[in-house]
Length: 376
Image (cartoon, rainbow, N blue to C red; front, top):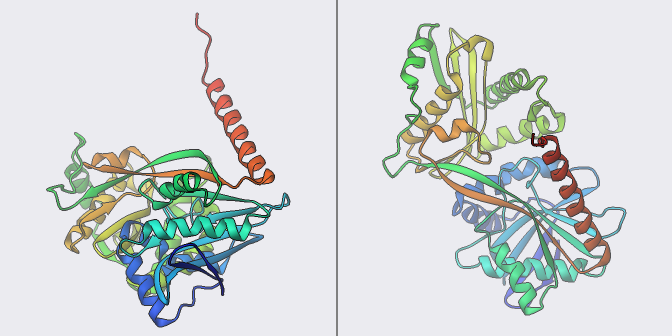
């Protein structure tokens, strides 16, 4: 472990493993639990998949923020040193499979932790230069304020380039919302059709081997669904290995919410979700489309998951990243996540930031040109 002192009360300690002593582990879990919509992706169970098999030439680490011996916050990071020599630092999981990730802190410590992170990056990598790549970071993250304060106070000279903004629809389960879609075509008709297709069973998967088998079934459903359309997210073997590692650990921590729907003993739909406290998050779902035919089995599966969340006392069902129309059949609200690059003044870091901006502008121009037609 490496420790650096930041101005103020906080120290930053870099750990190359997730093995924490009991006191730190309890504080870590408490911090993650206090912010469940992000904490599920900042849990030891989920992060372990990235630590077990990091991307090539990258080093995962856990930065711990301390006030004396007390753990006040943490952030998982991924460090890469490209050929141009400046260091790329990402929040571990952002852009790699976690729908959101952020610096995590105890109550009242978010600002201090975010400021300490930027000071630590500048003191550790300032000579070589660094780019902090923020992907899938919530709009209410303390990091955005820290970036602006760094420029005002001169504690860390950085520049920011915005990359993208993503909606995250979620359903409140405590304000009279129900699991019934608002679309005109009621699910009841499709449920009646489903009941006539065989003996329907719905079970929450709780055995590790059974959960892995259900995941394999889900992967097959998604491969069939997206064949010839760019492929499924689970066509990537490394990504599949990640999930096969974390699923038993999520189950052991009580975070896995996997629901299987069967007809006459044959699995026809799988829901894969996460949970922390009274928060439920929808990660992936898939179903046997040829078997379903005209039945809206995907909608029925999501409605079933929401019903399970209600019965288990959840206050929120989070659809996670993406604006797919099926999510808006419910009376959802929205959060947002932001992608941005934070670059130090070093020449190579600024060159990388500028190169990214040029590439993205060119891609946007090509996209608009493909859709342009001359007026007659």
